[in-house]
Image (cartoon, rainbow, N blue to C red; front, side):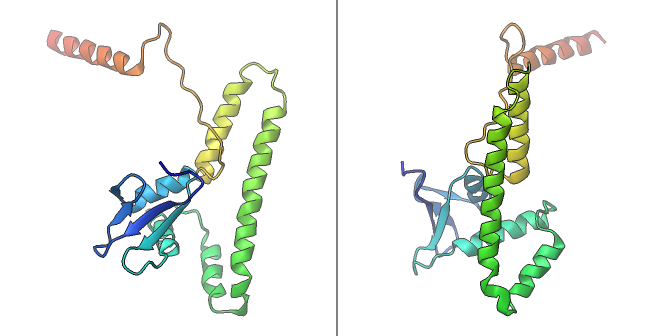
Length: 179
């Protein structure tokens, strides 16, 4: 398997199908969005011409999420982006956006470090911290690199949820037969 620091190479065939060269299978835009949420960089290239299509596909992923009502970009920001393509400010916008997102990531990482070092002696603090990390990860689309989700406790007695659901279904079936 390739080094996770290297971008995941996706090849686009003439049929417009996207091929994951690491796992040797076809992927969808949603799969690619998932790789990115997990912290993986991707590179999408046209098989025939070798052109880098990454930017085009990332914009398509954003457009699809926005069209489904998963709005992240305020209308004003979108309007300003469109304006930036038609003005002299165009050369400043990419650098500004990159620096803004870098600052956001650094701020999140610093906040999580500070949060982890404050008041660890409070009972239940670890569970609260895990919930906060999961919330921040969900709100930022997983931009934080090493965050973890809260660990789910198993019910007393060590039974798993699947077994409990099965027993509950059996009880419901018995009750329906009695009626």
